[in-house]
Length: 378
Image (cartoon, rainbow, N blue to C red; front, side, top):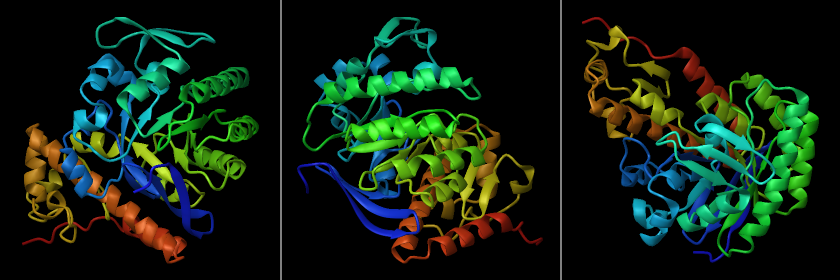
């Protein structure tokens, strides 16, 4: 076990990268998918289950944890790892995106952002320094800078203003973070859908010599081809020897195409949220368990899966649970979805090591396109 934070590139295949992030609390195998544990819990899952599926790291969120139960309280109780019983690495998002999307009566200036809680209407102030302080109280291993994330489409002047503000906030976060052995602060590239602004943001963040870099402000409604074009323009500017994290992404198709461009880390609420709404991700593609065609189907979601949720329960039963709004339905489908995402990441890593990533992507995409064959008539 290492006492410091480091990133090692172990193999490449084209622009796809296989690596490892080493931290005192463990190794993160990359490319990695981080299950989202927004408020200290991956919804509908025991964290022991999440670990057993192959997750090396989970994500927590400043905005939600500062509101409930409070960062100082978590610190008094031993930090987020002890509080949630997850002794492995944790990345915390700075709260900037949630302030944009959830908070009421938001007021933003050079100092930071003041907002009313969506929970009880109480007023809070979040500055770059306070975001880093909260992440320190939570004792997370990778901490994100506070940034301003804006919705697309937007005018160039507005995108540039937010990008420049995010750069100034990145420097303030860097100073506030200081030198914390074994931990890392990542900067966040902004710039909307404008390539020149993305490149400028990446260049100036790279000059700060941070331990990792994220691409933010995507997966906010823009078409996939726009997201991929931005990655093509942005990633060559970032240091090759540092990990790259694409925030809030995404679907399995988003992941394989982003890995092909050099992304190392992902997070998204999609597998857990979809599970709670009756949607299963499988090697056959998406399966909507609300659909009546599953009502008499005795097959499991995937008889070859190592995950009991995918292998041991009939589609008919899962359909019944979803249609009757039984909580077990969301639990089982979330379990299945996170298992599939981790299986996909393991396949990605193995394919890069074998230098057959393009072939792997073609095989996976072909299986999705073929879809799930309906049950044979009795």
